[in-house]
Image (cartoon, rainbow, N blue to C red; front, side, top):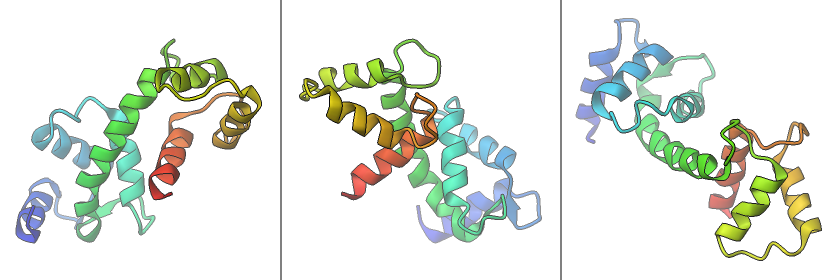
Length: 143
């Protein structure tokens, strides 16, 4: 999208205060990107990541990032859902290990897998949560 298109789209959903709330972003996503509209986890994660000012709102200069981030987090969300076979919105060690099997990766070194799992499980709750998985996937992309 061109800068003008981005500005026009931003103004279309801005209520006049110069920034977009999560509700305004949600409406914009549903309207222009309906394929992402039901993925609330991806919308929320993209919203948080794009809010580089930390004020809880998306300003025009942050708005362009939303579309790119939304696509990225939607893809990550789909992988997460595939691994979360019991649909409890978290990944157990067994689900994590099964993911390695599905990818054809070597899962025979359980100690290495456990170390990797524990590194991702940053809150040490015994499960990988979506936000933790996003951080892990972002770090893998950088490497």
